[in-house]
Image: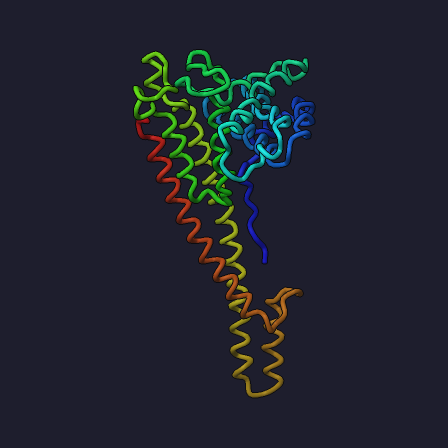
Length: 318
């Protein structure tokens, strides 16, 4: 049975900027990472590129920021696999080791003349506007814009990958987490982490403008997914119509009194069947297509509901 093809991360933007030659060297560097981290780096770069577009950044900055995003986790190649790939919760000691990927990545970039211009990706992508991030605990005014953008793209993909979404249904839960991280901590006074000046105490970890740009990207992706699914639904509708014609001929064949008429209707059935569809299995195929059709229609309805929720969040005053 033919199935629709949907790419969760549409690569259109990256192709539009023709970054292949620019990033060839940087991408080769990513070959030293494990498959999961490498895929994550590619996803974050793609999201970063598209967020920058929604923010109406200049082309040169988008290219620069995208490459920084590709390299943001380059330091993880020196994190022990038993910690990096641990399925359960990290201990405090293990978390401290994980955090060193930022400074390690920064050193890797600074030690390589071709990577040096993009050292901001590794060093800033875990800094938070309210000063609770790492490795330096920088505050808003000290965190470059590219670091703020990559942080949001990184957080989004990390949560999505962890939850293993195969579709954008349920993606609003991830976005709600990012929205919550745009807000200040509930109990500033009791938090040792927020020993910052009052202006930073009013901030969250993420830049809300960037989170809203991400939402625009996600809405665009959901609309693309709806379009892909609609194409598949239309394909299924055509297959169902074709197999229903087979069913009509089969019903007439079963009612026919003579062998001549039975053979006539049998040939009619064959006209509507493809060479790889056995006559005796057409009813099963029809049932499968009808089930798939109804399921995909439900998916489309749920995706439209997701868009409504995200648009409501996007236009709220967070």
